[in-house]
Length: 462
Image (cartoon, rainbow, N blue to C red; front, side, top):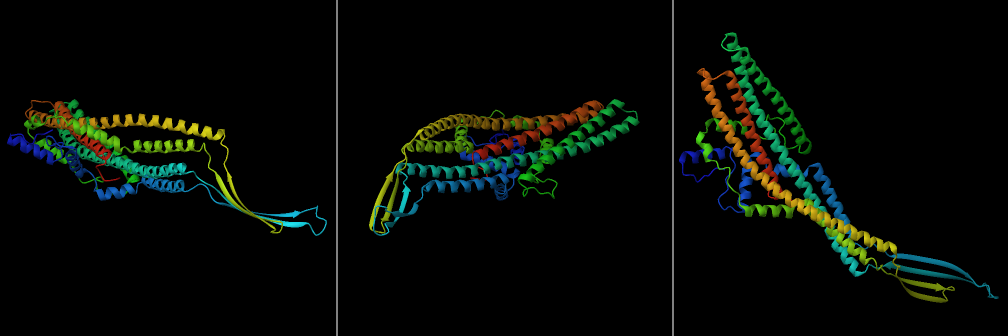
């Protein structure tokens, strides 16, 4: 970390310049609260990510998000069905022909007619449980949709920054390749002049070949990442630009700052600055509270709890009531009836209740385990983010040290005080240190993006 309150004018100016260049992590004010730190982190990420308008459009067009939206609509329909009574009115009619053989005179025949209307009645306690359960089913659909947006956001943030990391590495590979081509050509001329040995000339060629191999591997990884983004978020990539994941040339800024910074800058970076433990605990608590997988399991458990209560209530079956109107003996007799019947509960209802109770117990156990895992994962995420910020600063320090060493060896080589082998090794070390600085920077940004998305402070996807 860089202390902007340092009283040394030169170091203070250098610190501000490095932060502006995006090379050093943003400094939190002393005693900063949770919103202040979150806003500072968001400000730090903005230059590296697409605009929120483009992101939200890309997220909503994501295949998994569209699937989840259909699922949410399905759950809404399920909720409406659950609130409706499962029973319907039943209407019936019957006609009978009656013939009385004891009648000696007349035909002895008559017609009987009967109309009936019946329906099972849901007991009030059971309907209240179903209403409560239907509200939770609808909430479950909305949470599943929110989880799909959340996962798509994580995927976008990680892939986009990975694309930028590889593009930045490609820039450095290009610069080093040109440098080594020039150096290899120079060494070949010196070999012909008898100024160096064939071993030294071969080392320069091998160094160039090694960089070209690494450049090809980096390009392959970059194509893979771009393909992944193109499949999931096709509208975001700029296929016409060399830098399809943004025009921010962080590699150039890194090289410029490393080459211009003074040795004293290194002493002005505090890699041991502590973070507010209160804010850390608040972040962990917030991540756990807003965790979509945990909330999905929690809602599913509540639905199962309602189902268990409903199964117990179903031990007392719903009654069936009905009205009937009959006309017998050619309307000589008229009968009006009221019917009430109750099914006799059996073993099936008891076993269904036991099954619901067992499923509820299992879901509660899974919920407790998932809650513990989510809290541990949230704590680890915060810790990883903190460590990545410190590692990013240390890798920048290493890049600075390697750059200074390379400058010294270049001067020594021109004076004949150092060998070409030493110079080649120093150039490779400086190159790898800058690559490590790029990796460290983007690793910190990726973990920072994950942290802010898990805190639901980014892209407003809920």
